[in-house]
Length: 225
Image (tube, rainbow, N blue to C red; front, side):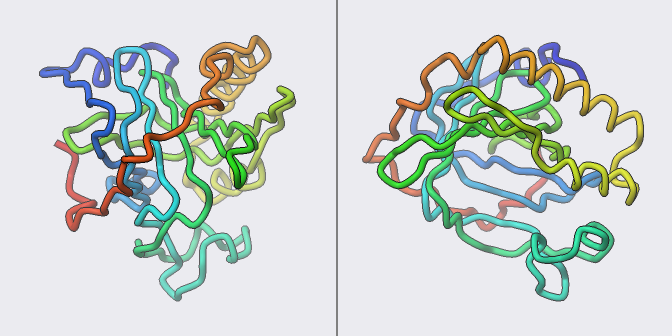
């Protein structure tokens, strides 16, 4: 994992940019597997050599992981959360909409959250494998550790307990965990310098009211081409 440009994203064969309003899938694989366990249809806001911006509207149908016995993942005690079998289930995004921003090759994406009435709440830095593009969208793998950034630029680590448990349960090697922590430190330096995308006023952006909520295709888990 590096902060260098991912050539699959930028310079791959037959490179194609999506247009604003296009609907694609933003997916996450299970850690260490090729199985998709999170899938969220999104609408492209911007897509070019510098940035992919995508909008996940309220009420978006999506796929999320759930324990095989029906227990929601967040309700399972952390000590056993990653040891029990999981299944992918259909659901809906119940919160306010989320704007997702990802720059080519960066091992994180930045998400923007609003409260009701478009009052900006916070940025969320999701540490993850650099996005891999394919014809239907982008794929990644979540790396557990995250950073929350407030409107006043104060920040704090999120989910350090999950990050530690994932290592204890063998979902992350010591080498990968070290690279993730280093990526987090680079993200912190970006926050402290107020670099892009934090300085770019994305919190003032609003979706086109004509955009429909994307549908979840039946083949949402198809292999990336």
